[in-house]
Image 1: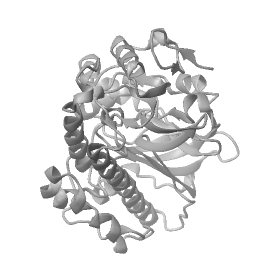
Image 2: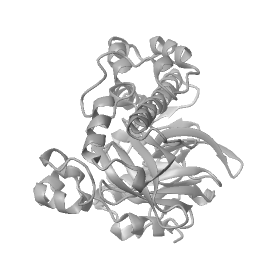
Image 3: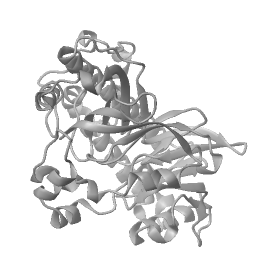
Length: 399
């Protein structure tokens, strides 16, 4: 489908779903964003839903300004995936044992590694730049100084919520049955701590005093506050990318131990909570994607569904109306609290038949029915991406 304009905004807000299907809270957030004087335009993805501070599934292009809430608190959150030479017939018969091995190698939930992972001792992990990366920690916001040890131990850990690790099988086509590995995580606690501190700083700046929503406070180019945020943001985005790289290397090692003949293609990786400097219509813009991936022409990306419905590997079509973006997933259709009230453990078990995963009260809020229909979301963005592969998970690890 093509986009629809959301009426009543100063800057164009282009929507890749039916506007009347967007919940009231998200619609209000989008109108508030479209009213900001720095905003050049907004692209709204089909997985859009209400988010803390700013709408999830929104791509916001600003001139000389940046709203930290439009990035979110999980700076650099994103996806990584790698295709293997295996087919589903090569997988171990006991997928429960494989899931346990993954959970033993990669801490999930609130857990972290007992000691920091040594990147030079992880098989298959790129080693370039680690010392330079960590040398940047001392320049971060003074409020996170005491958190270095925790940040070091959380590199290579999953977290909770909608973060996951999966073993997937390709569906249909010439490569049907091919095994992929996939994971979703971000900058862990350190990204959250940095984001919250900078959002608090932005709220106190005089130029944000009369905003329609104080969560949309911005930093303006050329100010020390903007420089400090950009420094910490870029470090946290790199932390997230390195976190996923460590986990993917550890995951590959687990699979290699289970199936020694395995070989891996080049990984695909993409942020979906981040900032990029991009140029559209001859104008240099700061583009924030909160719950959206870059989908420039030829860009490979990953669009996951829920823990029972599979995912898509996609190639971007470079649609500039959407600031070369696409959705980051199916998107929630109900809150976590409502999902817990609506569904039971038995419902979760029924909706994840055939998937080796947790089926307990701790993950009912992640039940597939709490998410929008992924195939419908994909149809709504057919002018943004093309499908490369459709995957279905057989193992799903949740925190």
